[in-house]
Length: 173
Image 1 (cartoon, rainbow, N blue to C red):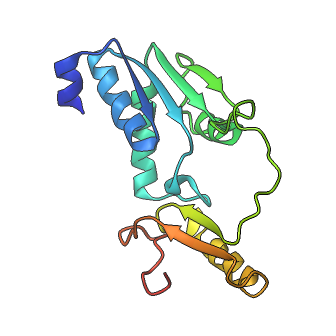
Image 2: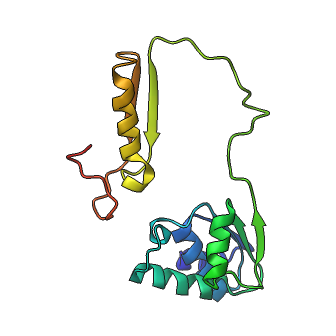
């Protein structure tokens, strides 16, 4: 990323999700590039009051990377903004925007009455992690199996992540 930014020298950079936000902010600070960082969620290391080494490193990198002029932070929820403010990550130099998410445009995609189909497929596209709701999805499928036998199919679609402690074992899947 550094090599690419150094070669291109962009006027500004837009980073989405935690790894690009952290790495991009550090690189952009070094190269004096304006940044807009979309923080769609803080990720696993910020769940359930975790205090591990990785979180400590992330916090230090964010403090240093975000502490610069022309750094815009876009949050999709107030909890994430409050968490980073409480950790002293969000700097007074930052310009902050809180948005209501990046959901569906309800003007373009209006509600329609139920579509009558013989078979409905319900898909969960995600990495196979417990904290992404895989267990709840499977439990819901089991609950509805008898009631909608042969009419509703539940499908998991995503990578198995054996390196993550929240990873769902292949035996479960």
